[in-house]
Amino acid sequence: MDLNYSPEQQAFEKEVREFTRANLDPKVARKVLEGSRLEREDYLGWHRALHKKGWVGVGWPKQFGGTGWNSTQQHIFDEVTADEGAPQLIPFGLRMVSPVIMAFGNKEQQDYHLPKILSGENWWCQGYSEPGSGSDLASLKCKAEREGDFYIVNGQKTWTTLGQYADWIFCLVRTSSEGRQQEGISFLLIDMKTPGITVRPIIMLDQEHEVNEVWFDNVKVPVSNRVGEENKGWTYAKFLLGHERTGIAGVGRCKRIVKRLQNVAKQAKSNGRPLIEDVRFRDKLAQVEIDLRALEITLLRVLAAEAEKRAPGPEASLLKIKGSEIQQTLTELTMMAAGPAALPYVREGEHGAADVPWLSDEAFRFASGHYFNFRKTTIYGGSNEIQRNIITQMVLGL
Image (cartoon, rainbow, N blue to C red; front, top):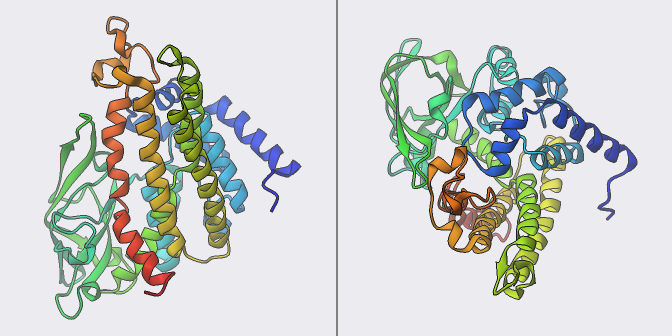
């Protein structure tokens, strides 16, 4: 298997890098490379630049306005843009609900929602988890009762990432209590401006407002906003989760962090010598690089299968497990490289900290915040324990 890029792929890589350098706001790139907090406009500015170029619909079929790129082109794009410090394209619309709308939505839903997702006009968030219904998602209780041409939705969703910015939410709701839990769930598309919706912030350990609670109090949703059949939402939810888990792998971002760690380790000192000469640190970093290379090859296989219109299967669970573990290991290695400088987390450091010596190195400024924040990666998108159960059943047949 030849892992080197062909001349055509090298030319594409060059084109993506030149475009990114010419169109990405340097201030935003600096925020991303430092690990600083991004605002709504930081994400949307890059999204609009890509939309103008016709490069937003990565992985989308051309018939819906996508790039039509093959798996290698998708991978090159993700890797190069991550390396240059581009913000991650928010996945909830582009990579999560869009495939569901394409596969199971009607033409009216496709014609209305997909162009607005591509343009960045509508920002989406995810309404899956509830208090008491996370890994056991089928136990959800958020209820939708049919009244004529509308559903009346009541209940709560939680851990809604970037819900404070969202225009729409895709939501799993209970429309029946009969039979198995999975058989009474429907998939609704809900306008966040609808009366009765309240978004409340959840402030995390790193003091960031990244996730939210979303409350529904007699929210009136047109039946036409239901994707597919009533009580068949569990099928669409699993389809979406396969795409979410593939995206969690984050290979491009991980490779950028590895490169950064290599540079930091050459400068940081351990017992008076460069940290890169410390056998324990060097071995851990080398192991991450090996694992990341294996993850990269697996990701390419999954992307190639998607291009053939095969939905991600249990291999998406493999990507989720290993990708999340690698991301956590990288935050741990960053803490190790930073040493005592990683201990404080002072948000004022985001805007310069000349008067705070331990925050002066941009490589360490957010080390502890990221370490705490990335504990979540083995939980969201379906906990890694649940993913191992999926692999046990679908691959090993146990």
